[in-house]
Structures are given as C-alpha cells and as structure tokens.
Length: 282
Image (tube, rainbow, N blue to C red; front, side, top):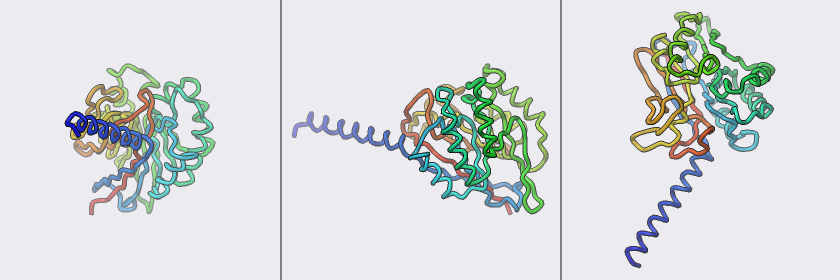
C-alpha cells in the first residue's frame, strides 16, 4: 500500500471517528457531580442533593424524556433546580414541557427561574407559568424561600432573567446587583438560581454562597485544555463556560446544559445533568 493511500485511509478513519464521536456527544446525556463544602452549610442539610436542569430547550432523550428522568431518579435529589431556558422561544410546545415538569415534581420539589428564552416568549410566558403553577413548581421571581430541617434553615433564591427588563448587556450587572440588594436575604446559607454566569461578580458582591447557572451551553464547541469557543453574552473564549468557579466565599457551578438553540450541534461538549451535594465542614 502506497504512502498516499495510507494517508487517505488515516484521514478517512479520523473523519469517521469524529462523526461518531460528535453524534454520540449530541445524542447521549451524562451526569456531572460536584460536592460543595462549607462551614456555613447547616448540619441538617449535610448531603443535601440538588439536580440542576439547565437549558433544556425542549431537547428529548428517549420517549417523554425518559432518559433524563431516569438519570435524575438515580440521583435521588432533595430538589430539582431549573435554571432557565427550559423552553425555547422558537418552539412553544407548552404541553410537552408541562408533562415533563409533572414527572420531575414527582421526583423532588422543583424550583424554577427564567432564562432569556422565557423572556423572549413575550406575552406567551404568562400561559407557560400558569402551567408551572398548576403542577406545583415554585417559580422564583427575584425572590427567596426558606427551607427548614431540624430547626435549621437555608435559603433558595432566584433571579428573573435580565432580558425581561432590559436587553442591553452593559446595564445588566447593575440591574442584578440592585435586585440582590432588595431581596430579603438573611445570613443563612443561600443557594441562588440564576441563568446568567457572566454576572458572577454581582453574586460575589452580594456574598451569595452557591450559585447554580447555565446559559453558556459549555461554549458550544470545546477544545481540549482550552474550553468553550463561544457563549451568549460572553463572546469568544468565554470566561464562565462550564464547571465550578470560586471567589471569596461564593461558589458558582455552570452547567453545560442539555439542549441547543441557535447553534443546533455541539462538538466535544456532551449535554449534562449537574448534581450538587452540599457538605457541612465539621
């Protein structure tokens, strides 16, 4: 066999592997686990588990999303955090979304915050939120609820996506800071659900303990040792594309998300369910 033929066969093999890898990486869903340890976590909430569903965009893994539901059931979470873009503004199949929510809430209490795609629904969003309320989802509109176990308390706070108010990115961090200032947060451990990771500094400034976020889609296309290539509101080579980030006493976990929107394909960027376990520092 000549050198040229060997070279062509090698290129063909690499191309076939890349196609198979990409298809597998778009059609399968994995779970990423994080443990967040803090002396501020109450002992009653040690090993408290949060399943984070980010950026679903109506993606389906199996009939009625049975693949996603099985992964969540396996984790046996104490709560499900839905961090925005559960729907897609170009697809308003609210009945399908409601059916999935009904299944999720049978697994664990569901807390929901909006993303930019909910904001882009316009007047249709009210109809969708009514469906969420019908099945018992807690929708957090720049608000906070308290969870108490054995007389110890943590806070679950949630921010509406800033696109509901102003799509000018130059003012969105100050908007979020103002909202957090006016939120009735106590000194108890605080878990904040917020779609936008790029506003990390606002969360740090507000002394939030743990932020669950999404929106960046993992940078859509990921390069080894470099990370994501492009993300909404962050542009090329985003700083907050996926994973865990810490500054001062604030930890933020950014999900790569489950579905796609404007760009319909991911490369080296498998969709993920994020599972976070709290650990009290003894």
